[in-house]
Amino acid sequence: MEQKPPLPPFSEETARQKVQMAEDAWNSKDPERVCLAYTTDTAWRNRNEFINGREAVKLFLQKKWSTEHDYKLKKELWAFTDNRIAVRFEYEWHNDAGQWFRSYGNENWEFDLNGLMRKRFASINDLPINEADRKLK
Image (tube, rainbow, N blue to C red):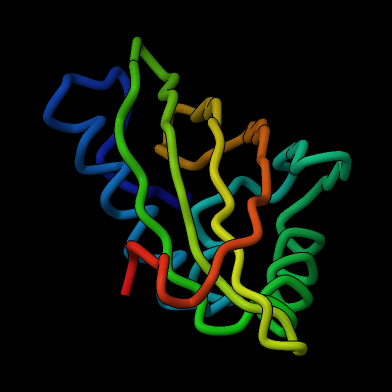
């Protein structure tokens, strides 16, 4: 049986660990690594996309990181309870044309008893920025 400690129910310390682990994994830009944090039947809403299943997550992330260049992410714990965590985040990236963006928003996460994320709901806004205005490097 797959497990991804820390396991719920979360304390403030273990919720912060879970958030940091997610930030580190996403900054690796490795879809194979990142998708292992999710249940095989995970359900996502990412902006206006609905993604179901670990394999679909992997394909989504492959596509994402093939177009979002020099991606850098920062996550921050917002709230937690039992098997749920809410985070705020921001990340910066540029497209093929060289336009930089800061994307920011909130995520709500729900975990199974083995510490795998079974639900992820993300609301994300993109703000065009100048390269000189980047905060995350």
